[in-house]
Image (cartoon, rainbow, N blue to C red; front, top):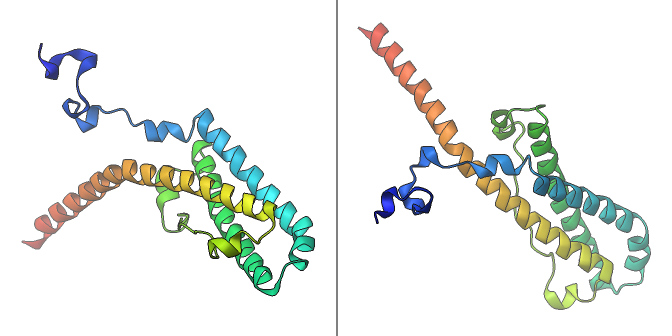
Amino acid sequence: MNRQTDGWKRPFAAVAPQQAVPFIHRLTASPAFADLFSQGMALVEEAAAYLDGPGRVEARALSRMAGLAYATESMRLTTRLMQVASWLLLQRAVNEGELTARQALSDRHRVRLARQDLACAPELFDELPPTLRALSRRSLRIQERVIHLDRGLLAARAPEAFSQASAVAAQVARLRAAFSG
């Protein structure tokens, strides 16, 4: 039996890149993305409600060092969640046709995702209120998921951008050659 021509049983390496199905493009329009979007936005709302309410009260009861760690971690949590929310909203805009994928990748719209670890040492983190710790851990998990998806989307769209840029460069080269001599 020839593994290269065995139909659906072909190894992945036998499939040409142009024949591969770009699942990552479909992922952001899938129920899994809708679930991620809902989880992300719910976490943003939950964190905001906590930090504006019970979190303020809990922060006042902390020692000076733990209070500083609370302030730092809450800022890091907020930044992390705003990056995640921005990315999710941008992808939803692409899914709903408000932006093209190319526009979403442009510098003007591009969300710069930067992994943000916990703001303090583990022993100090353990002194923070349980709710803040839980929110921080959940935000790290969702941030990892978003960064993973973003890298996949960038990798999937990079060949498109490269081929379009190459086509433009080829046309410019032809024009220069035609008008230079």
